[in-house]
Image 1 (tube, rainbow, N blue to C red):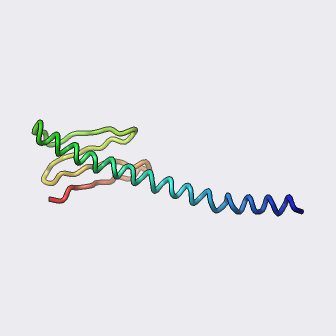
Image 2: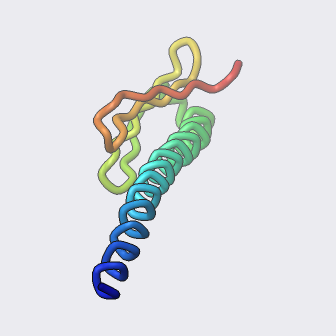
Image 3: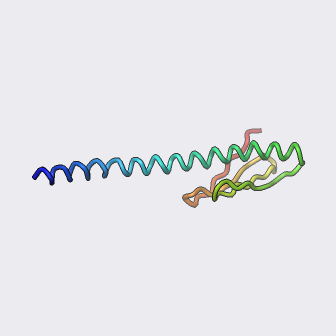
Length: 91
């Protein structure tokens, strides 16, 4: 009987903690991609000032960030979930 109760407690703990940890991991992954997009905005501004280019790409791990300065500087990328995101700099 004690074994059954112990197993029930273990399954209850892991059954609640595992989904919470997975959700936290997903949230952190999306936030890291967003941070990389903002860094790409920063790098794009430097490229525009130094070389006069108006578009480009930057790869971070497996994500490709594409930026364009028409008319506002924006970075587009595909999240690890397959959704397309765009972040633009405020004028």
